Length: 196
Image (cartoon, rainbow, N blue to C red; front, top):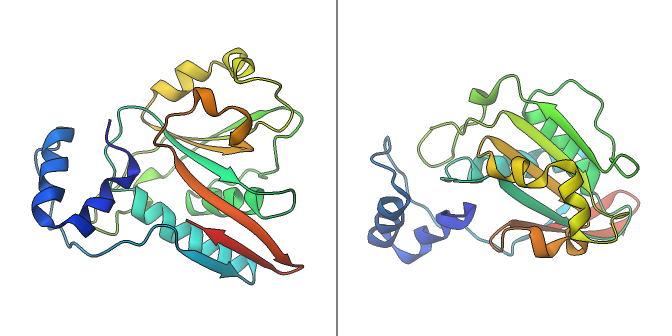
């Protein structure tokens, strides 16, 4: 499996990027425009609009990935740091009309993505064909084994799923080691630091 960090190859040079694509089984891409990507970048969101822009940029970067399983995104941060708001912003990008709330008490909510082709890679214009957004809040779970009651293995096996997990540190042992990580930090009433 090639993680969403495949784009890190950009900083290694064009030949490394081609090698990773070759290893992933990708036969060809449309025009590829290579440019450096910065991970560990901290961005301060001062509004919902800022968070939506950050989410759109994140989705655009991961859309070029090649996945054998679902794309898992761990949302790390304290209560009130913006994890659910970020997931709401992603749902809006995917044109999900449902009211997105934290699944604290139900643990998992699954939303159909009606128009996946709207999400284009920032690299080659290709779209990732995500079909479902899965939102999990692991705060109330005592162990990762509890995810199995939610058909975790089946959800993870479907490469058309994009999974956002709040409190991923509570279930790390069942998450892919290369899952995407986003850190959130409360700065003030209207400001959040988002580290991607």
